[in-house]
Image 1: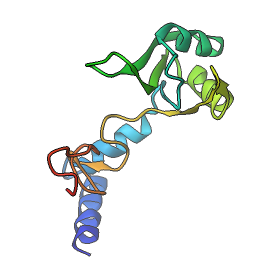
Image 2: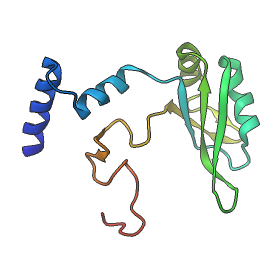
Image 3: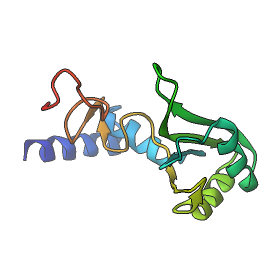
Length: 140
């Protein structure tokens, strides 16, 4: 209940323009839809170049990066593709989501800043900071 009251107060203040709040920055980031996409469910054999090739048919790919483990260098099974415009990104999302890529069905979504769309001032409404996982205390 306290969260709801505080959230409504912050929202009222930000609408009236009296205060720059975390809510305002969150709303601004939602308005600016990114041309960066998250691609999950990648085959562990997928590398940066094959990811770029798979998405280049939808527009100019600025960057294609597969996330890799720092110690082993093995793929983590997800990556990011950045297009030079929103139309290309939108086309890629609608065409590639739930399609097969190198033997695996991939999930394509618009990427969010670290912490996700439900983060206010660095703390997620679901607990923890930046939407991360606390390895020292997994119950946190």
